[in-house]
Amino acid sequence: MERESPPTPPILRYSALAAVAYLLLDGLVGGWLDHQPFLTSLLSADDPQEWWMRIITIVIIFLFGFWARNAIRHQHTLLRSLERARNELQLLIDSASEGILFLDTDEKVQLANPALCQLTGYTLEQLQQGDLHTLLDPRLPDGDPLDSDHCPLCHLNPEERTTTHIPHLLLTTAHGDTISAECWVRPVRNAADLPEGWLATIIDIGKRIAAEQKGRELLEDLQREQTRLEARNEELQRFAYVASHDLQEPLRMVSSFVQLLQRRYNDQLDDSAREFIGFAVDGTTRMQQMINDLLEYSRVGSQGKPLKPMALRPLIDAAIANLQLAIEDNGATITVTPSDAIIMADESQMIRLFQNLIGNAIKFQPEGQRAEITIDIREHPLRITIRDNGIGIPEAYRAKVFEVFKRLHGRDQYKGSGVGLAVCRRIVMRHSGTLTIADQPDGQPGTTFVITLPPAPESPAKEHTP
Image (tube, rainbow, N blue to C red):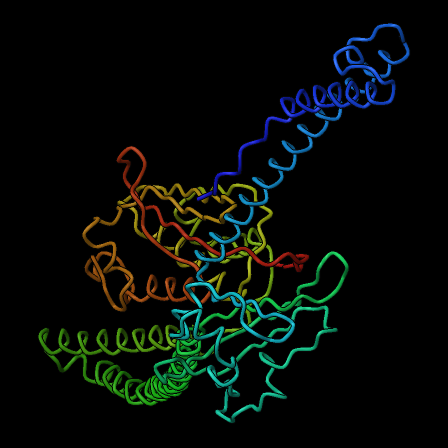
């Protein structure tokens, strides 16, 4: 709260009294010099020059009074402004969350805000009466004590003009606890550029150091876990690869002998036996296909090439070119919006992705219907929508179709092992994107796949030849 400034004295009243006093004194001195009575000398009008001198003097007295009154008022205004600034500075210091300490040129504490007193546990009086180095006992982060001659907080250079940063000190509180502190010491100089002391700011960084230590421990745990998962993933991929290759040989042998049995003894077998042999041949064929698909699924992460910036549209065109026979057989029409988008991609995997999705759109059509496929590309952010007019996927099964070997239809209706969409999602995930199924507009039949991919960093696109 601001203190009330003293009232301005009635300068003009004093000026009037001074003018009256001047007239009385002039009459008294003039009468004494002229040997006249006081009243006669005061009212004498025989000398105009004397009256002019009196008038000029009285005017000067009043002008001086006006000037003095304005000067005093201005001084009071400055004092009020100074008092307001002092109060605001005090409020700022008192409300600061950091500890603030002012030391004079003798390195004695002159000011300490409540935050510093709360941080150290000492009152302002204790800090002012005691030795700062002895009270706080500054130490290095490793715990080694500092003598007062080498203490960066207590042994200060009067000629220093820059702020000194002390990133980490251990200080002792009044309760004997140790706190970690970070300090800034700034020299304070007066208008004559002479040192007046130092302003120190001290903050408690104990929680920050604990959080950093916890973060380092978590990072180390994550790195160990990542190393363990990478080793386990590599082991699983190696197992899947070896198991797939090891399973291929006995399956080929079983399939060959069953087919040989069918060719040699077909005339000696009845219908049931021939049917059983057909089941065995079909089962081994499907098992071989499932193993190949599983092997392809595992290779997405294990044998992928590094991602490189490349144009998106040529990748889609390459996938369409690979499906040209299926497109002609079905009479399908494919519409692709123009785009200059550049993405980070593994070329072969990205072509495989679009080839699978477009191939599914052609395959999963009602009997006799031609596929109509629209590929819409929107940028900022990059969003690729592949929409068809096929049989569609019920909403309840949209999550299941991305699982390995999940099928919604019998093998007699549509061929396949149910790995294609799982491979597609894994490819998209490796490219840091998402693959989802959206609702068809206006309830139209068909399926809409939505792919989001991050754009490539600003760099010239590499040429791609389908």
